[in-house]
Length: 111
Length: 113
Image 1: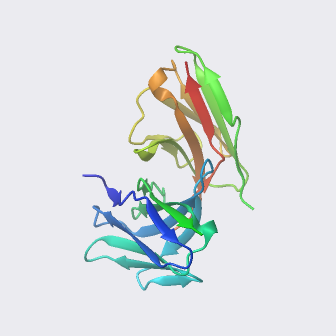
Image 2: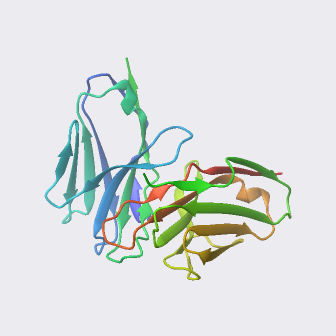
Image 3: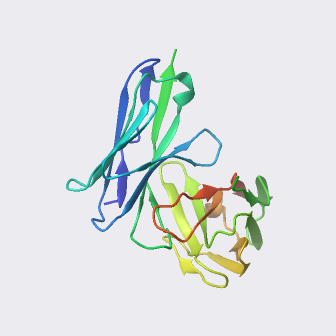
């Protein structure tokens, strides 16, 4: 079983739709959680960190469920520019920052 | 802005060649990483370094070595390139602190023929 698992998709949604991605992780000692975005042929970039209390940044909401060991990303009012691959990232409780990346979920937003 | 720069965007090498991939970061980050990314396999950690001259194996170190002689530079070495090392290679750096962001270079698409 992979340490971090994501539904690969693809998710094909119309503009304006709400879409949610989930990610499960196996290491209960994990401490830091992130969502990264990767555009086609580009490097991954941080989208948002995920905090225990949940956090929101505009149309994006991230949540963490430690008991069930999953994190989620909700995108409201999808835009064409949201089309990308979304990577779930989990890190242990050390300063070395050795993170484990999920394989990514591909989102295509269509007009 | 943090900048992580990889020496080449595209590289074509022959089987058996020794290949050097260079990565430089300009934000005084302690941690540096080398990943490879392949379709269906996601990002896999090859090696990482949390200090000068320090290195640790990641999940797939076989066939690779690394060098970190200076804090800002982390080199990935393919001792004898093979066709199964054809991939996208991504370098990243981060601060040595909890809950910190990793910054990636633009990637090197290596093709071994």
